[in-house]
Length: 384
Image 1 (tube, helix red, strand yellow):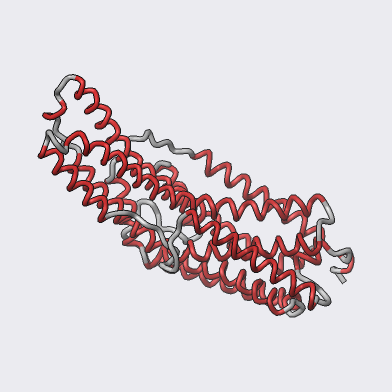
Image 2 (image 1 turned 180 degrees about the horizontal axis):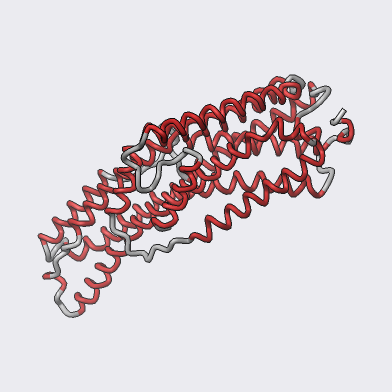
């Protein structure tokens, strides 16, 4: 990922007040603050109006399902509001994050991949058009009363997904660049060993690499400070969203092909983005492990014959040990591959419990917005 792609995402995010502008990260005008609070007000009013129209559905849920649905709506709302406040209140951290990424080396032939943003938008809006067609046909104006604000909310969430993806890829490329530099040094030393020149080879690159290691650790800490809460609420939202759709699928089954497409596209969309971002966080740690591995391979060539080189490598290893990056969801839990299994475990556990509650107690009346309009044979009565 490149700064061109980051700049594009920040420009789009600025229109929704969830990111600062690429060139005006440090300073903000009164109008920018006013626009941010306007967006907060717009989202709050929209969610409130939507809640009023959804209330008649929610009161017919079993208690557990009502709690899950309210938590789902709340997670999305808090994510949206926090994203706007994050752009207003953490501009200094934003500036530092971008500045650090510019300072660190990257020799991995970074490409812009603007097509990835375009393709993601195309897929996203394709889902939105399909959803609009499907629900307008069934619910008519009632759909817009209940869900109009979610066009803004869900696109803001998509931009957060993509922004996390871009920044994590940029961090990974910089750690990978350090690995490549050390691998080049290792390859050169192995060639020099055959010519008996290795003992005199100086490791002049280590000072700059130590600086980059410290700067990248600071960058990861800033990333956690800015995006810790958005990551947490994204994981919560994805887990609850998948839980609700799976519960509907297992208890009500499919009625139409449109239902199949809609259900699995939603599950795939949110799961894919959440899991990819988690994998990228884990991949940063993996790149650091590769740096350790290459450094230890270098050390064995210097430990006996080049005392100065060995000391420099040991200092580099000490710096690396003191600056191992780690990602967390607002410091509630560390983010790595095991997080995905934790999410699966939570979804499956709650799904079993929810199905049991649904089976034993029954919802009675209207089941839910999604259940009734897509799975029940009473669609024709919804306009009455």
